[in-house]
Image (cartoon, rainbow, N blue to C red; front, side, top):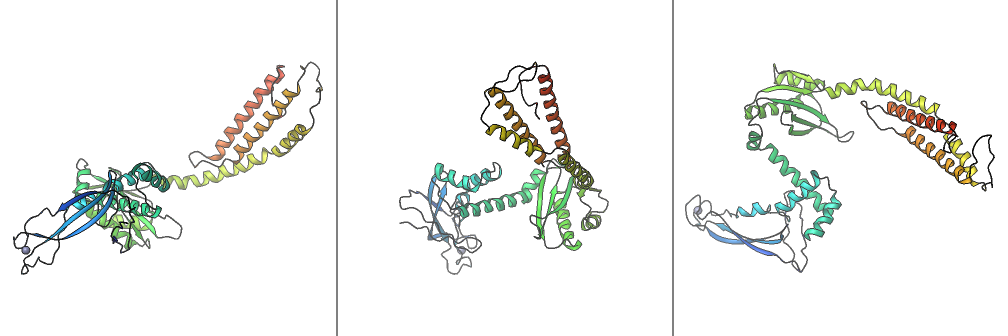
Length: 378
Ligand SMILES: [Zn+2]
């Protein structure tokens, strides 16, 4: 059995991967690109081989990295070992997945929202790459780190902002879970990019100030003026932005404003819902009555009102079903709590109940017209 060498990852934990005995590797030899010692100019020689086995989307790869060093003992560079750079273009030295697989994972996870289980099954089925759930999670985490690093790379940022005249910045604190430290995110609104995020243990002005300084450094490095700041009215933001960006307009976030305005609205809406639920009641009693009727043996002939056409037992049965359906619909409407301040649930409830009322009216009108139909009981 071939067991891959233990791979020491950055966090210092050992992540061995046990390759199945019948794994067929494509062997690839990599040599150090440079031929001459940078310090003394002498020829480099091969001093060791490092074996690195990785999964790629095209099958398992066995990289044989020929390590080189300067053989001259007197050269200060002599103790250094040089690795082929080409290796890092295929996979990072301590990884068991090639870049192509890591990118495949990240794209499926974040652009298509695949679950880890789905990723795991697809990797195994289509690419014969068998990984544990936590290994996949580890690589997804690495993908995120790489993506963040790329987003923050100054040259990438300069390209993204080449055509932008001025930047507009926003800062907000997010608390993923109650009691956890708050994650402060600085975003740029012109290109809709997250610039950076930092979790702070306190929202003290001095800590927030550091983030604002960082934002200023970024804008200066880009050579772009800051046209506008946007945030909620948290004291640390108001003071910090005024201090760090004097003269830059600071607008307060419309979303926070809307949320404050929405509060009394939602309270009134909630009271209206209670009132409607109070008015529309007795569903259970109607249902019980209908179900009790259903359990009785069907009478051979139903009583007839004067002038009404004779009804068959089947028609009566159909009417009961319609009554039960109405009850179900009304109960669904009364239990529906979906909707925010822009679509208050109470307004939706009122509209839906009105539709039911109109539907009942239509049925009643048809009934009066003498046609055989449904739901007059409701
Ligand atoms: Zn040398």
